[in-house]
Length: 301
Image 1 (cartoon, rainbow, N blue to C red):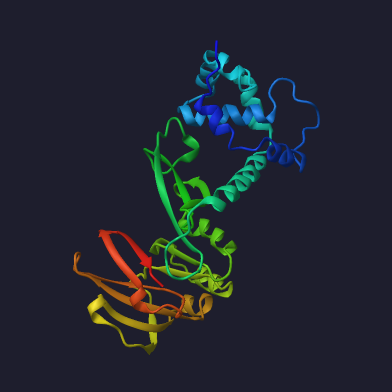
Image 2 (cartoon, rainbow, N blue to C red):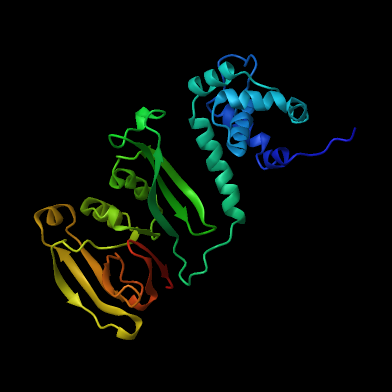
């Protein structure tokens, strides 16, 4: 009977076995030989679980046993639930983090670039809360009757690939995950919502020459240092240089920032942005309000 290639096998071909072994030799080589499940088998099993939507290791083991003939052509064998459980709990997960970094670099080389006029790297940073059942996930206790996790994601607009994902409990504040922004390359731009408004974060990003654009909270005390002319027909209401005047603002963010006002005709409200750079003209910082509380913008610099 002729062998027919499977979709799962085609997806595995994107992962170089040579790179896989090189990463394993770089510091994740086992102290003794694997008895029944090597690291490649563990990776294939967990990838199979994600692609097929398996909810437990027991379901995964059953599905792999059912498809044992197809796995044979991949050089894989069915795995027991206990064996896979031991492998997931005892082996260093840092190996798969390095594997992701290797695959990400390969994908980034073929991904399309953003179509904005400026050459700066552009990122978007935000978080999403995922509700969970409190009885099944008591470790992720969020409120009295529910559990949840929060996905903190940094998206690279060159190819729109997620270059950073951090999973935390839902009660973890967004600012705690924002430390990932401090590793961005100099002269890059990061867009984030007002949940990330933090004096210390603003100061650290500025010192690292990372430009940011965020919504300004209305109750932030500040004084106007300089005012610039604007084009009202573009919806702009103000373009100022400000300095924070509160005690906390003076201590943690003693720098000058830019404040741009914009009035959205659809929502009939005015919002203010805090970009950290004067390199781009305010007309090129165009804001489009889609829904109340949610916003997006394009940097046509």
